[in-house]
Amino acid sequence: MTTLLHRTRRAVQRFGIDICRYPGSWSGPQLVQLLRRFEIDTVLDVGAHAGGYGSMLRAAGFDGRIVSFEPLTGPRTDLLAASQEDDRWTVLPYALGDTDGTTVMNVAGNSGASSSVLPMLPRHRNAAPHAAYTGRQNAEVRRLDGLWEQVTAPGERIFLKLDVQGFEAHVLRGLGDIADEIAGLQLETSLVPLYEGGLLFNDALAHAQKKFGMTLMSVVPGFTDPASGQMLQCDLVLFKEQEER
Image (cartoon, rainbow, N blue to C red; front, side, top):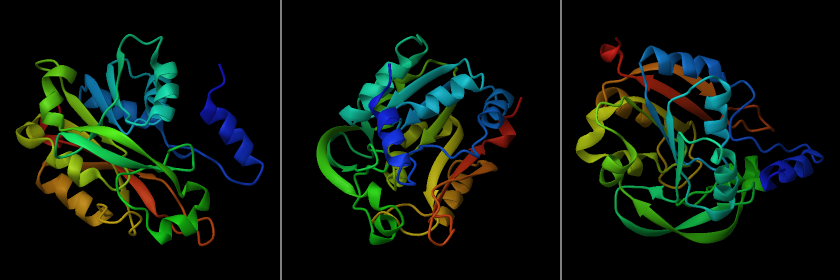
């Protein structure tokens, strides 16, 4: 079945705009190679949107468990469709943060791909007018440490992927005492301020290296300003190298 995301993507491509959660240069096989090298059992896919990341992992050969978190009802419909035939792929309807409760999500015009709890800054809207906020939606927020026993099993090696549009620091604070249980981490980071109060590249890298003791293994190009060619976002992929077996 053709999904809403696919129909929308085809429609906007006629105007020279593409909707893609992960860039064409992204190497799924490279990531899966790293997941195998560090014996990752489960990927926690936070900010899963319509399921592009999980589908990319499966296409590249990852056969471990995937737990996807997506609070917005529109993208989650496509996410559930993408995962429904996969008994090792679970979907939960939560935003993650540093408190339990409810929040209001700002829904972005690019099929929700750039949605965030945080206000979007003019730099982002100017570079991607189609991503400007078009509405708001209530969402349930949970700390990951409170969900840990529900989403992981004893002895599993966990890889945490965050695509939460500037809200990364809040999610990481919500790990609490389970931070040491994370064997690998993927963070989408901004090189310039795109969301009010959002975590920026230098702070994200320093936090992952110092607090989590991780080594940077890959940098994945991301959102680029089409007018200037300047990269505005990228993904950092890190692992605890000393835990390699």
